[in-house]
Image 1 (cartoon, rainbow, N blue to C red):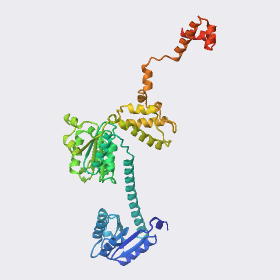
Image 2 (tube, rainbow, N blue to C red):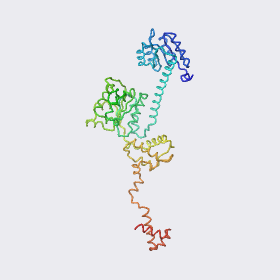
Image 3 (tube, rainbow, N blue to C red):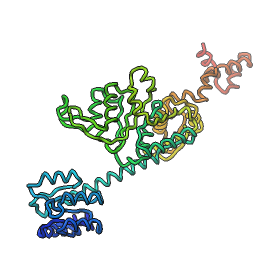
Image 4 (cartoon, helix red, strand yellow):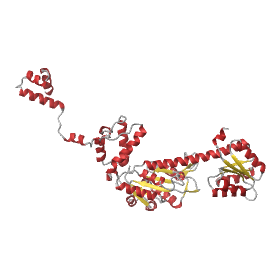
Length: 455
């Protein structure tokens, strides 16, 4: 009875114009805890779907009045989430395959044993459970991502996130610009998870990180044998993002011939895998990002003007961190909390001196550089210890006010100060080493050695 515990209360409607088939299916499924109703009329079945809301419908393809294919369509129109399994004879396998394309979860060929039937029903419910779990996890991860993004306190960042919120509600292409490390991928994810495509895939490709000869296959996929090493067919990133968002990072580094192919996909919403003539329709929202000035790239002949205007429906420029320094400490403390949790260390904070250094740095690597600096600092700190200047990267420590003052002042070494004091006491004692040694609280031989070291 373990199977019954896995699917308590699942309601199944069986539709077949042959009464003995209905009875056989009912007996087989009730043994494992399912609640089963039967009918020999497709029209009655449709009424039952409207009134009793079964979790699954098992129906024969060949039935009088209304066949199983039409019943399938009507069920899916009413509620796409109802599972439908089709019973078919060997002569109508093609129809069964067509039914699967139209939304049926499985087809059951006659003749079948009770064990085979139970296995198919259990497999269909398990597949549905995994899909629902996957959607739930995607939604939860997306919401967690949105919640965990630090937004800063500056007006420039508040305006940025207000614009991101407005853009997320649309389906328009977005072009993100800004210096390297300024958080373009974070903003791209916010746009995706803040919009109607949040439960669909978010796929990202870094155009500068993939060799040119592999980029086309990565983007569009390939068929088996398309080139040497293509042992299997592969879905490209565009196909993987179907229904969701596709983030093209560093698109300014893409070569012109690839830009032309991207433009065609965006305009026609169709693509061809490498080595194939078949066109595949896609539905993706494209978010592109670059740290280059694309208008200058267009003038230099390195970027297509038509692709630029296709992407530049909405342009969002991310400011460099040096232009909103009031956000440095909130960002740094956000990263510090996150890394404390990740490294399982007690929560801590920055010392006043370390905070001043962070605040005064220009951060040419922007938010990414700040994040890396905080991670490094926490690695060197003991559990619960304040993040001190000595834990920061050398390039930051050199800008410490105390260290800078030491470097710019003519401080003397401790040895030279000691020698100067010994000479001053000797001079006051008219060169009497015994008397000078008594005043200095050292032996006369020690005075002799110190003077010898100087010579």
